[in-house]
Image (cartoon, rainbow, N blue to C red; front, side, top):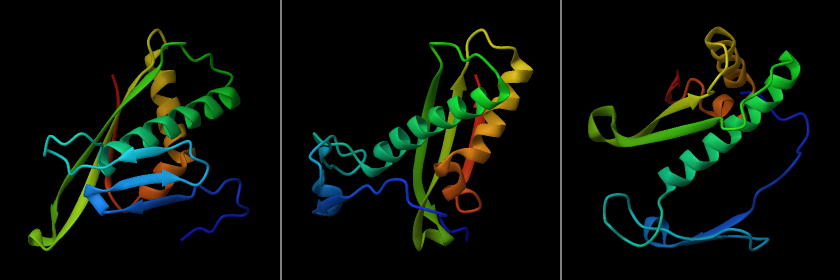
Length: 140
C-alpha cells in the first residue's frame, strides 16, 4: 500500500442511517438523502456518488496529463461512469465494478487512447481501485 507523501485535502462527511439515511459535509456544501438502489426512493445511493466522484476526478487527471503531454483537450470532453453492485465470493459479500466511457470528440484516436491510459495511472480513484475492483476504460 502506498502512503500519501502529504495531505492536500481532507473531505469530512457525517452519515446517518446508511443506505436509508443522509450524508452531510462539515462545510455544508454537500447534503444528500440516501436511498437503496432500485427502490425508487427520492435519494441517491453510494454507487451513484462513487460514479460521480470517479468520473470528475478522472477528468481532472486527464487535464493534468494533457498539460504535461502538450495536448489540447476538447471543450466538450466527458466521462460516463457506470458502477455495478453485486455479490462476490459465492454471495457471501458484495462488491463493485466500474466502467469509464471517455468521450474526447475531435481528438486523434491514438493520442486520446494514450491520454486515457496515462490518466488512469495518475487518477487517485484509479490508484485506489487498482487491484481491488474491476475497472474498464473505453474510448467512445
